[in-house]
Amino acid sequence: MIHELVFTSAPEGLKPGSQGFCTVAQSLGIPSNLALRLETFSAYRHLFQSPSPNAGNNPTMCMHLVVNLGGKRYHVLSRVADAGLDYTQRTNKIGHHFLFEDAECPDIGPAALFSIPNLFLTAWKQKPGLLKARTAFPALDVPPLSGAWERLGNERGWANVLAETVLTEQPVNLLFEPGTDVLPLFAEAIARLPVDLRWRATFSSYYNKLPPGVACQWKGIVHGTPEAATAAAGDALVLDLSQPLGKAPPVRRTFENRKSPPPPAPTASSSVPTSGFTPEVVFEPNLDGIYELGETVDLPTRSSFDAPRFKRSPHQPPPFWSSPIIFGSLLLAAFVLGSGFGAWWFRPVPAPEPPAPASSFLLDCIDLLLPENNSRNGGGTPP
Image 1: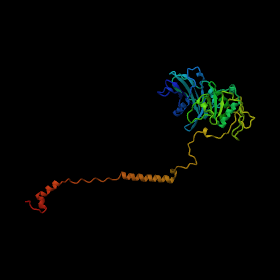
Image 2: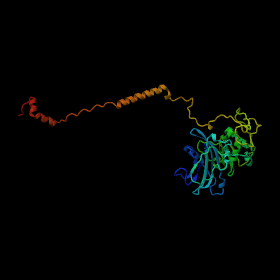
Image 3: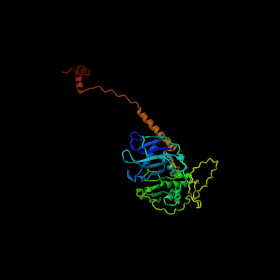
Image 4: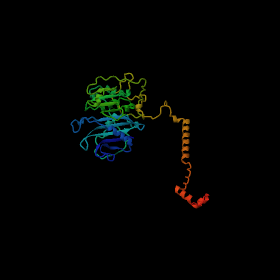
């Protein structure tokens, strides 16, 4: 199942009482936690405010990210861009997000999906509503992707350099000036990868902010932004597209003894589906240990691509109460304490003694002066 969500500024949102920047449309049946998660990928920084004549140079943010939610791994495909002015005549943006699992990933890879006509919305003018859930992305006949790097005055070998970082997991920062579209560079590099590795490439064509805990390997960074000031930090590969990159270095295999033999070529009667995606440029086969297009690469499983498993380590000692003897002792002690408390609570209560008859000193004196009391006590008649 493919879920989607549209986030923009509107006088009325999908949720009752919501307005301004809010969700205006989402797929029918999307769980609420997934919808809330997709909203967090709508952050966008305008470089030029509308109605500036340079507003058309605001970059379009195209992203492919991987998130773990509820013990499952999901792919997020997002397009966030400037959307002119909203209903209050203030700067607007629109984010259109897709969320899906591995089974819905097409062979062409994430970057090529952004070229599907009308897949991503660029404006929202209608009332809020629900979208019919998709079961698959539209089919796309993509011509061979090549020439994107050459159109910027660089060698086509840089696409291979970028593709190899998916294997080495080295982060890449592409610095560019406003008006440069780096998404075709990502698409051409992903086309160099074998089909089973294309969806490992995570990227943002205009990187400025992501939710905490979400990794992005390829980052398109605009010159002059706060992200550009720290682009050279760490072990990231920095490619400045505002100047010629020079000769592309040769790419070589990173993991030794993990190159699988190429799969057999499908015959006319074969039922093995093909992607119809044949890039013009592939890894040069003359270099030792180079991955070629279509090869199955057996890489070790890494935790960054696995759903979290909440299991106790085999080296971690079991809880102390899990022992049968200790558990039985605790149960017996609880029974004894409970029995004693019950016996005390339901004990018989003795009836109170009746009060003693009331007496006083004056009544005792009168009783002694009476004749019948004196004669009974052996006394005579008083004089």
